[in-house]
Image (cartoon, rainbow, N blue to C red; front, side):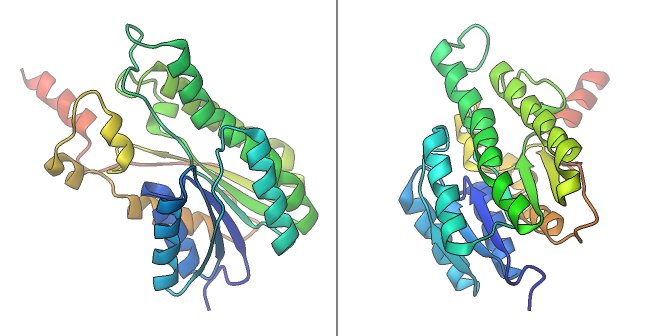
Length: 254
């Protein structure tokens, strides 16, 4: 029996990358996982992986940039399971034209709504259910760019991910009395499909040296399995071969 047997987890951005890895890891611990993203086919693939691992999954596609769609999924979870123990607030995106020289209002809206508004919508939707059932844990995927502004990630992405960090800390400030815990995970470079949106392509060899989705998924599993009296407020996870550090070392030697 896993540490999360009997628990219900809602994983957003579950069709690939960190969300997919987290869903499988939580299911292996016994949680029933509800999978949400915009496209049904990738979610079905994740559900198949969960089933193969011996877990249980339900596919609930939705556009998380629309509050009404988020609220509908949350209401369905409450109606069917009468509880929600874990929210993995992982949905996110970036754009190719991310520098100030190219950034458009449309691009700003896409990045801010896709990374920050969606996280707020999901959080606001599940807190009443968690309060009613006596507690829960929220785990939000931010980024190292959410701690240190990055031109590589772009100003809109950096700003949105900073917002996710601030959001998570305020949840603990207000909801700790309701046995609700919030953790923001700030990964460095992870070999996920979001890298395909980088203006400068990332090689296969570079991706192999990065953190992998499964590394972050296992960290999320660990956080979810912590006892209710403990919260990890914030955590960073990076590849040992940190390309930013390596570039700085090379500049220092030149």
